Image (tube, rainbow, N blue to C red; front, top):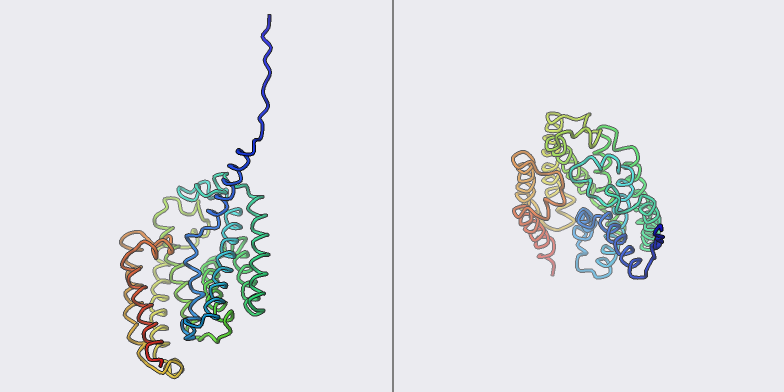
Amino acid sequence: MARITSATPAVSTPAGDTVRRRSVAASLLRSLRPNQWTKNLFVFAGLIFAERLFDLDAAAKATAAFGVFCVLSGVVYLINDVQDREADRRHPIKSRRPIASGALSPDTAVAAALILTVGALGSAFWINREFGIVALVYVTLLTLYSLSLKHIVILDVLTISGGFVLRALGGAVAIDVKFSHWLLLLMLLLALFLALSKRRAELVTLGDARGHRRILAEYSPYLLDQMISVVTASTLLAYAFYTIDPGTVQKFGTDRLLWTVPFPLYGIFRYLYLVHQREGGGNPSEVLLTDRPILVCVALWGAAVILILYGHRP
């Protein structure tokens, strides 16, 4: 007699649904890359250099602006990961990202990106209209980068740098202060330095780098070294000129900012050392958080700037 068996259908239980929701939420959070949010600290430049650091209302608005940029930069990462999921699956590290690995579906990522964008832009326009416009320009520009601009040589790194300038500008307009043209130029150059260093690290450390990011086929280590040299010198000169500019001296009532020049000198040279001698620089945020000499340098620079700008005030 033939044995009759019946297949038991899979039953969705409340506990199982909860676990799946938590898994999706965790994957979504990972895809927003909170470890990269240190890049949004550029937002606080206006607060510090406008001498409003201890103004509670301005500090609250700058913190809210920082939060908006954290969400919007996370949205850009979601869009980028959806767009690059096939290429990421061939990458030794990026293949572990939630979207590339299949832990987070592209549809869920896109839906989350839309919801977060609406919420973040709504918050940005609530802070003030000018900040809302800067935030809208930022997310539009970086979305265009994810979709097409990252495949155009030179324009790719300039777009990334423009994102940092918009962060700094956004932080200034959020608290309604003017931002020095010198500082905007400095932000652009520093971001360009980091972007070019990252391109070089990717090109050198990945065996088949062009297979992972096709724009790398347009670059070579020699070309990137030439660009980095130009940008390094320009960044240091821009900072030095800013510290001794008559407008800067008049605004702060001191010329002692020049004393802080050794800190960016050491920081940039240390970063170049990591790029060339330690094959680092592929992840600027990771370097900032893990390299102790750079951490100490940034902390000392910040302390020196705050002491000089605020120490002479009655």
